[in-house]
Image 1 (cartoon, rainbow, N blue to C red):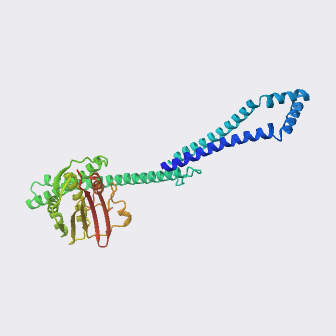
Image 2 (cartoon, one colour; image 1 turned 60 degrees about the vertical axis):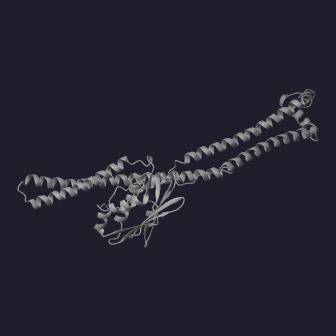
Image 3 (tube, helix red, strand yellow; image 1 turned 180 degrees about the horizontal axis):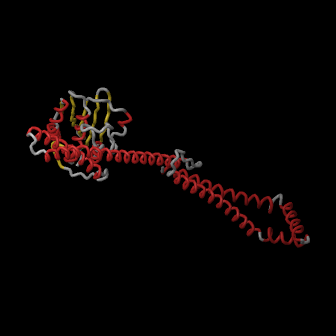
Length: 375
């Protein structure tokens, strides 16, 4: 960009010098041809004749006027002519700059156009047109992402509102039945109480999703770092998932060569790894194995989460880390979520100056997190 502006300034400077030189040349030509040159007599006779015809002067009077203007006051006339030519050159330069300003103003206005028509500018400003077209593309992309995110959020809130009503209706119904049927057998009373408890847990999950949506702000990731044992933390997380693994007869293999001490925000990284493990469990085939690897190098630590499940299409991989995006568009107790888990995970990893990537094939889906060692 800086080099392009230098080229533009150089071009304008050369044009200005060219116009000034042209003014000098035209002045010199006028001087040597019409005043002191071969066309002097022709010019003089023509000027005198014009005064005679248009002003009614005699030849002698017209000749005296010519001498006073073009011979006796020659330096003043030449200076005036040069200033006139120079003024014309400056006017041309001003028009050129004005045209550039107008083009830039029009191009800026086109940034807000809804159309996909590219911004086109004249020679010398092509680089600016290229930059503005790129800005326009980025703005349109961000607008589309924001609009899709808002639509997903609205749909999610609608789904959650509907889902909250379902367990709440069941809880009210069973509690009303327990209250009205005082002589209900203990087995039925215990069964209905258990159903109410399960529905309450489901209701709590949905309410937590509501809170997740309302409090989520992607720009408010504040880290509270400390040194901790990363491998021990992952072992604890795997143990906590044992009840969920039993439901689908899954198994987690945690593999590492040596223990890793890491400096970071423990609570937020736990949230990242918990989200990835929860996704792996939710989308794994029954009776499959989830592989978790921890690799340590001198500069960074890498964690991979691999599960066996349906292949994620490429177009979904490109948007999987966006807010309110859910792989499973159906709402089930197993996979239905707020669609914030991976978006939050990415923000936390990026806040640690790391990266998170995903790839999916028939061999499995792998999430890779790379975290650099930094104080």
